[in-house]
Length: 188
Image (cartoon, rainbow, N blue to C red; front, side, top):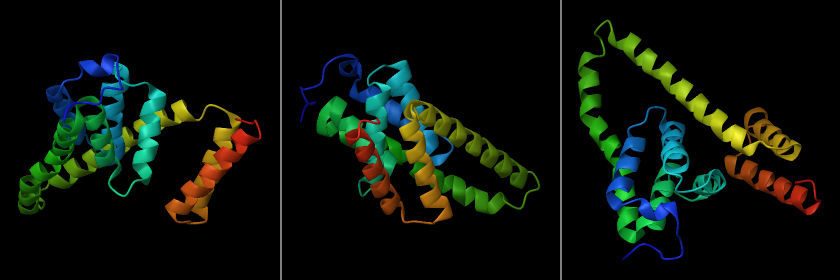
């Protein structure tokens, strides 16, 4: 199956090989999902200008609610958008491959974790990962928290998730209703 024909522009310049490389690089990122997100944003929005920030964040939001991993959903969506079914398969394989490559490293870690420097090394990686996650969260926050309505919805979602310990699906639902209501009232 070939790539969908309803998209034109810089995205057409991304080959299947480039897609595989982008998603492999993202899969190797430290920091889990947000580390991967930062790499994808850098590659697709900033460097290649294949999609604009608004579309990138919209697809990320959709990826958060579909019944799969968010980054896997993004891999499928962008792979299909740029290179059809073959692209979706390639990007999915590329983003999952680093996880499988970690298996020998984990086996080796079990054998050397008692070595004196290893705990310091892993603490350093953890701190660096938190920094990457924080940087990605700041980037997303700057792009999405653009007015007082978005700040109110953000604060409400944070309170529902952290203080009230609501189910994430309920938090997303209430936040969506707040956003729709604000737009209907002309506030957003």
